[in-house]
Length: 177
Ligand SMILES: Cc1cc2nc3c(=O)[nH]c(=O)nc-3n(C[C@H](O)[C@H](O)[C@H](O)COP(=O)(O)O)c2cc1C
Image (tube, rainbow, N blue to C red; front, side, top):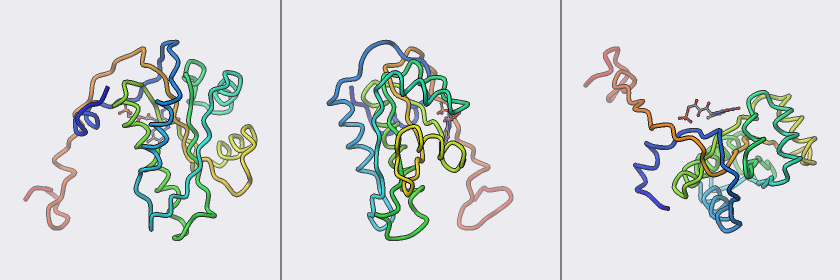
C-alpha cells in the first residue's frame, strides 16, 4: 500500500494492538531506508538501529519500560540510537534521531503497518536499562523505540489544527493576521 503524503500524515495514529501476521524482511528494509532518508544537522546521520524480533527480548524490553506493554504483541521493534561519533554539530543528535523515528512511523503507516513511538530519551533510567539489555556500547544513546506490526485497531485521524497557536509575522495575542 502507498498513499498520498498529506493523507499519510493526517491519518497516522499510534497503534498498540497487532495481529499475528509477520512483517516481511523487505518491508523492514523499507522502514530502515525511510529512517535513514531523514534530514539531519549538517547531514551527519548520527544514527544506528537495532531491529528486535526475538520474542524473549521484546518481552524483556516491555518489562523495563512502563509504557511499552504493546511490545508483547508486536511483530518487531526498531530501536533508534544516537551515535555521537558521527556528529558534526554536538547536541543535534537527538533531533536527527527524532526525524528518523518520525520517518519510520510515516513509512509504516504508508505500508499498511501500525506503529507507536515508545520514548526512551531523555529518561536516564530507560537509556541505561535499554543499553544494558541490548548490549549497546556506552557511548551510544538509545533515543526511541518503534513498536511495529499489522494493526488490530483502527483509530481515526484527529484534526489537531489550532488557529490560535499560529502567529503571523510576529507573536500576537490574537494570533490572527
Ligand atoms: C517522544 C514521544 C514519546 C512517546 N512515548 C510513548 C510511550 O512510551 N508509550 C506509548 O504508548 N506511546 C508513546 N508515545 C506516543 C504518544 O502517546 C502519541 O503519539 C500521542 O498520544 C498522540 O497520539 P497519536 O500518535 O495516535 O497521534 C510517544 C510519543 C512521542 C512523540
